[in-house]
Image (cartoon, rainbow, N blue to C red; front, side, top):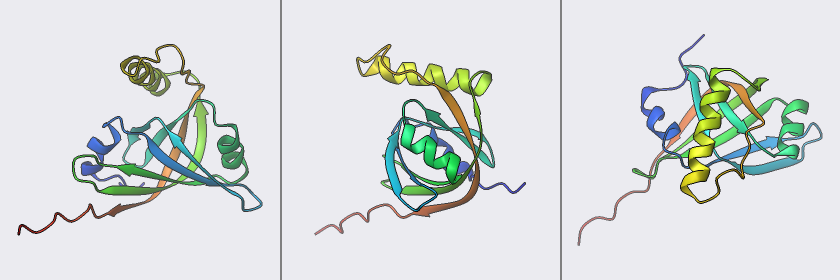
Length: 140
């Protein structure tokens, strides 16, 4: 399988900044939501946190394609991943790592114990596009 996730996207996946996910139902109705984490699985797969997004998960079961937009806070660049749902994991090393990360995020924001990871949804990466960051203003 092709190596679709470039090395320079890893810090963006690990930066703790929520991502935007776009799905579409079988009858073409879009849904946009914010997800707490996109977890690197391997060069061709990521895991998304499934916490409480019933419409999103329903859309993904009807139409397995999704888009996720990641932001690099250091450069302002954005990455768009086109994904295809493969499976949900409710235990195992990926689930455990994501669950610990969600609890760390919740604890850091004073919301410990509120968020519950229901599953780590594994997606195959179909494409990756890096969007340019904002241009710095030229000095006067």
